[in-house]
Image (cartoon, one colour):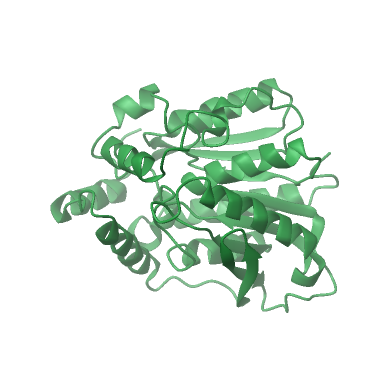
Length: 316
């Protein structure tokens, strides 16, 4: 399918504005500005939103809890929950840049979402962000009842680099016998050191480009190696991992990461739902008002995933 016309106009706008090069402060501010622009005028149903902190490996860790229908987080009827890890190449992104996305996941899926503001490189090289993701998921699991979440229906997910963190959290939790109900991986980055066909075909001009990927890799530091901790696609044992919903975009340089992972999980007997979104690019799901198709797709992703969490035995 051809590029969605709104995506095409968005890419033209980005090309006219320049990419910001390798100036990380400018890139961080650019994502904040894009997120504000894409969220302008978007509305969701009533919900409560509360900022929290927890003790993390590197100090206090900021979280944001979204609860649907304005329910108090301490509701007597625990529901499904999602620990959400934002994208941004492990070098940018925060609670605010992905606030609109989390609100849509919460509203459309009618599930509690706990967003995590993990540490970023280069100030905190890898595995700082992964350590925070692991700690936050453990903390939410331990405090699920206080957050109004059924611990048997707690999932982890994210987008882009955050989806890569989520995949690794599932792998490491499996190794220590901790059960998560499911994983939601949206345009996941699972092997930065890889070089699949999509990395070559969409290396430039499709929002996420190869130069940015390589710059992020360099910023992550000397421990960002081609091994399963940094590249979950390089894990060799997938049996027993939680059911996965994996979403990829047709014109995304990391499309092959998600699709290869879906194939490997399926071969290992892990239940997988995979969808490739035609005409879309990396981060389409965060473009809200700029790409009209993006929000209905994200809403459908949320509803389908929450349906999995509400099934009789999501982690069976």
